[in-house]
Length: 368
Image (cartoon, rainbow, N blue to C red; front, side, top):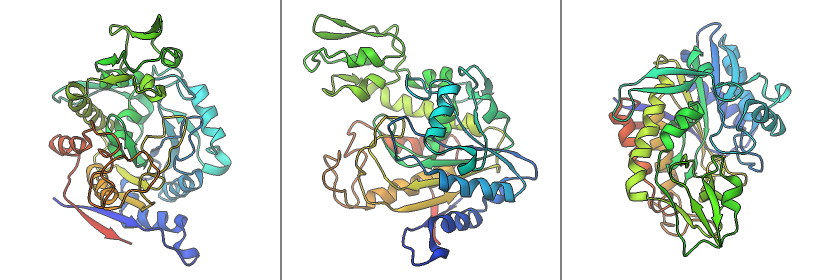
């Protein structure tokens, strides 16, 4: 069955065409109000951005979604979960402080912040999915208990998943740290000839799996949790996953967690994807690199697979911008994210998600 995906471009010549107005119209056209019943506790699942990152979805745009949910009779709350790696969002106290510093206080965003997996990510619901990799998954308790959900995603590249959109926001974003560890199981390794022994990876490793042995980093595979934080900070690219072995099962595990996040919410979830500031990395890194392609617009749908498929195809249709991390596939209709991270398999997100019944890749794009 074909799913409708609605796109609002960025041209505007009056107040009826500003981005706030576009979000309101997308909400109406995609029928997201039909996902919300009177007095529903509605999780607005977003990413508050890591400290140092500034390309997350703006609080003023989130406020539009909050107000629309409340107008439908819902009781919205802003939510995310603890990160597996160290940083500004690894526990609820630091996470809320980071969110407020990025403008997501009540006065601006209009809703309370609830970190859905609790103070130290111990608040979990075990959800049965019965898939290839997992029979059950561990979803943040307050997301599992929410009556309905609006998932707001900043569509970006990602060095392991290929891209981050609605599916990744559901999977990584709704899992407890136990669930994140289950998804991240991977064979990380140090490439000795590239390592300069700077020790940066040792400092950021949340599991203490890295140490310095002389002038080289040493990794304990039994301690490593596969979070990949060491990879993001290594300027020499001296730490790698075994891409050929690890990427497909990682992506499949992630999709299965997305299924768990939506369990019990059939017809009760809507999705916004923001194709603005389309960076090579997700908003978990403490910086924001130059966008790979020009801004495209904002999309909405009730189908997470369809909206991610549409976003990926819209990005790939664009010519790559000069002076970015994009090292290949710069021409229109070439895959921009494999042109940035050549080992990734973002397409597998979509095919496996469709196989799992999460949604459909068959979509109809409707401009509004």
